[in-house]
Image (cartoon, rainbow, N blue to C red; front, side, top):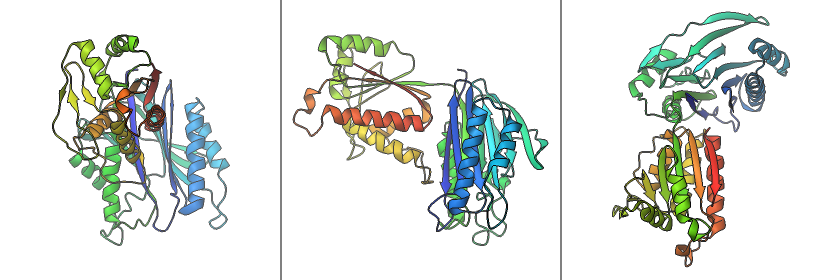
Amino acid sequence: MKYFIDDGYVSLNHIGEELCGDKVEVVRKKEGTTIVLADGLGSGVKANILATLTSKLLCLMIANGADIEECISSVISTLPVCQVRKVAYSTFTVIHLDHEGKGYIFEFDNPPLIYIRDGKRLSLQREKRVIMDKTVYFSSIDALENDCIIFCSDGAPHAGIGKTMNLGWSMDDISNYVLANYSKDKSAMEIASLVGEACNSLYMNEPGDDTTIAALRIVKPVTVNLLVGPPMKEEDDFIVAEKFMNQEGIKIVCGGTTSKIMSKYLNKEIRPSLNYLSPDVPPIATIDGLDLVTEGVITLGKVLEVTQHYLDNKDVYNKSLKEKDGATLLANYILKRASHINLFVGTTLNPAHKDLPIDLSMKMKIVENLKKSLEDCGKIVTIQYH
């Protein structure tokens, strides 16, 4: 795998609506990644149904190798007809990229996307095509590392109309705003939430239209290895430690007993930090040869909370993870830097927990929920139990 596609999106519901009329669908396969942002006609339940049908049909068909023009024809002819307006209508943006960075974009009536390369907006060649009397624009992509694509529903350029701005927030304005705040170490989710927060502000927290901002970044794959808890058999301590250290990538250890095992194996001392940066998270430590050493179950539980908050697409506010406590530092590694995450999970009851309301089932539940949340975030996660 040459490149990994980091993606993220946030959505604002039309004021007074429980459902968003926009929908983002992502399918990852060995051949590549397909992302569809669909915007259903109107708002509320009907718009949500139109957008959901469009995004799911397009995403699944394209990801499974169907011809793009046939996919679009099928979707246009499949959508239910609105009884009020007598039209079946959902705009969409389709992006498909393989692991070499090659792919294509199809845009139908959504605002034109923003393509960033080397900190500047890149102008893509857009070829006009007519499919079932609908005008669709096609662009081919040959992406490079750190390229970034931002695309949105029309609620973004409409932000502020009649409130804070006369004519809304144009795509040029959005592009300039992104470039002014862009850095290549920002994740796709951070970039999407950056624009989403600005849109919400222009709407004065009362969106007059469903608004979705999606982003993707083309990055090099990075593996994070996470060792959690001692193995079932004490005689396996060094076997697991050796297997863990032989992995390529970033190495993080969670848990006091686990840290002692790694300290003995590496013949390096544990240097605990005396800085309590958060009352909810125990302090970290350092061991030469490891990238991060944290406490175990309490820190992992907090990491799960941070991850679920980070994934909440209805929360458009700052997702930069700037805190320096152990949970946030760990979350930065697995959410913003990792493409692949290997979890090495010990299955013995930690003797350090004998007087605490913490048992093995609690740790296992946190690990399984964390795995699911990371996979929802697009990460490739494996678990090895010892």
